[in-house]
Amino acid sequence: MSSTLLLVSLLAEVAVTVAVSAPWDVAVFSCPPRIPAPLQRHGQYGCPAVLDDRRAAAVGPGRWSPWTYAPVCANASDGRQQYCAYTNSRHGIHGMSVVTTPEAAAGGLDVLDEIMPQIRGGGDGGGDAAYEIADIPGKGKGVRATRRIAPYEAFMTSPEAQDPIENVLRSNAFHAVLADQRHMALFPDLARINHACMPNAFPRFPPHSLAATVAASKEILPGEEITISYITLGETRERRQTGLQRWSFTCACPLCAADADAVAASDRRRRRIAQLRDHDLTVATLRSNGTDPDTVHGFIHELAELVQQEELFPLYSEPYEHLARLNWMQGQRDQAAVYAQASLDLLATQGYINEAQRKRVGVMLRAFAEEERK
Image (cartoon, rainbow, N blue to C red):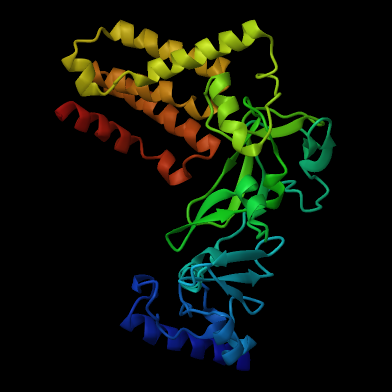
């Protein structure tokens, strides 16, 4: 009974306060309404306190929330900016540490409210683990599949971790945004995945998040090494080797190690893909140039075939979009909608857009109409 009365009392206080000022309308660095602590979420309701080591010592552990340890701080070499290490040991699976400015730490509290993806076999010791860290001949440590992984299945989720050695970070880190500021993010399991120029997996970084997921780009069988690309997909062999110099290794993946004829054929296909993608296929341009629809149709089908041959999975949806645009130009609105939806469905399946965006076929068609009026 007493707990019920307490909850009613807390909710009454919330109702009165929210009526004055809705917390989601409050600026990041202003103090939102005084919501009772048991009902707070870190980012939406918590007043973001700018906390460094001196303030942490002054206010005591009870005021460090959501951080579970006092920050450890140091000044930059020029003395202008202070950076601190913040830790929340209860975030995600393994906890999280962030090295950033006190202001960015205060302004990025909303990332602690994200629900970490529940991924089947995420490598957290579950009985159906999808992968393991293993010795890979000629590469040192790597990641190997322990069961079949379906195309586009997300099989790894990795909260960020902090590594004190900056050159390790620079070699293994990805970019992340916290409080609208760019940061380096180190994901421990993800950092173990080796490179391949025609990989079987790819990382996904949800916006405004401190986690990454890894998904299969095609079927991965048990015992097969899991690989991602460290560089932009679709480059020729020479450009790939140049781009990989920052990691100080010469790629010997199956694509790079193929015989000279196979490498040359792949390079030709990749250069042709770049040429086809350089074509301006907007509705207005197609009309103004008097481009023959059959010619454009041929370009689109050639592009679709080449990206499949080179396994450039981020481009798989493009031919559908081009076919939608071509049908719109020809006045075939229903068929344009079919191809537009196919493009969005594939992007959603791959995890590049969310389910709400999958349903926005009308937005794509309106974009075609805007192109037509230009």
